[in-house]
Length: 278
Length: 349
Image (cartoon, rainbow over all chains, first blue to last red; front, top):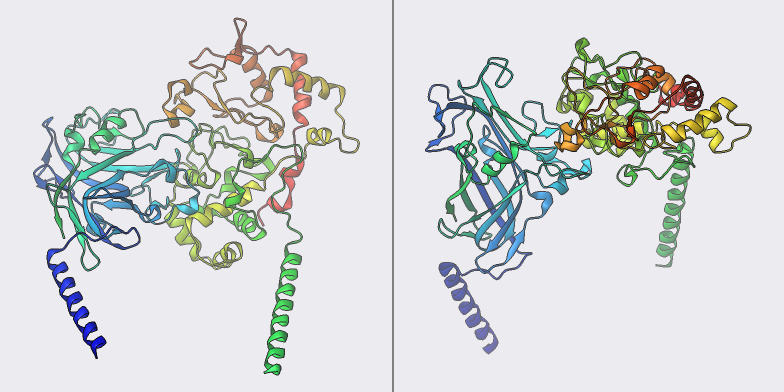
């Protein structure tokens, strides 16, 4: 009898404590095996406006004063890593850490990963595909990394084996109709940024890693019973207006070239934490 | 109870016997196929066979895909169209490859041979793994002008392919990786190592060089072997051999690396099977071997990054007299491998 009573009392206390815990929401003990969902949302914007494709009726304007529309946007986000408020660093299993964000397909705007329950103050990710994966056996290149995409939507260079990390295309009247612009007269700009550093000799490396501090906008509280979402704004205007600002007229087509390193440096400045939904 | 144990033991033995039987049957079935065999006088291959063991099923699937015109947009061009076996898997007679809709490329189609020893692919590099190489011709506008996605979709509708993929890889699933690995398996089997030269080197019965061939071999060793090193007859490196830049100013390796010292460097091609692979150079500009000899003798240009071996003692090029050329030609003909260009197992079935 006494035993049963003891049990009931202990149970009651335990329930009470658990209930309290939920309310106060203390940080769970860090356990790399205790995984829960976290998503990072890549919300593409253009300066002060939302992203609209083929916005010929209402053009965007960069700091060079050039008016332009956007027709395509795709980029790889990979190798997600989180840092907890107490300094624990967790790297997501690499096989589950490659995401192709397609501007025209809203469903692709989330990078969904599993990380240990905890409170996170920093999110780190790579813009593009790391060099190790870029040189791996083809059987390790599935899902977003399958090089079978079409020429238009593809994110892979066959002739110079490697992924295109970031692809932005659009139109601007400032583009000339000659070989320095768009000889087809369509006034199209194309930025295809890639280059993982070379297989046997060092070549251009446009892989950049970005760390976002969540402290000001709200830390991510990752728990099994909810879905924490880190909402990032990705400002495409920074492609032109970042630290290495350039004019579309001067560089309407940038692919595998030295100038691509200037643009890829700008890409680091695209990502800004807006808020976190816990 | 005792009876039960007896039956269990019997059943286990039967299973073992069946298992053994199955294994012997499989062994018998593949006994005719030897897989990839490294010629005794060749170095260790570069290709990572650990990731893609050549099997009979994989090889046969690769062969079917190599000769499959569905790899091109309008189902007219296969790999075999520009890599013809009787021309040592080149497009003999075409200075640059002739692809879909009669479009012309910018480079001469290279032979498919001894690719297991290749460190880089394409005349100008850029591709570092044989498994990734077929993406280039399939998607190139002037070659097959198709997408890999569409190729996979087309193959899935052809009844023989799911079966062949199952034989090769265990299930009927058709994926990019399996497709590439099968093509690699076929191409890896295109080994050229049975020319007269090889027989002489292996000291096979009765194989000896004639006086001219031996003299040509000696000349080769002093004048050509630095870049065209034995036994593959290429050092697998990239060199600027002093060709005058073409109208399109193809800058070779530089395009893939953007390193200034790579400008105008192209891959040193193997000298094997030259009798079948004219025209020569990355853009097929020389129709005959004599054209090549004359280039090295008197036409080497002082373009950026000219290989130091071609400008020694204040003189550009390699002097080659008429007599030298005759002897070198005699030797180079000992590199012709009739087996490669006639082997039934490498032909379209």
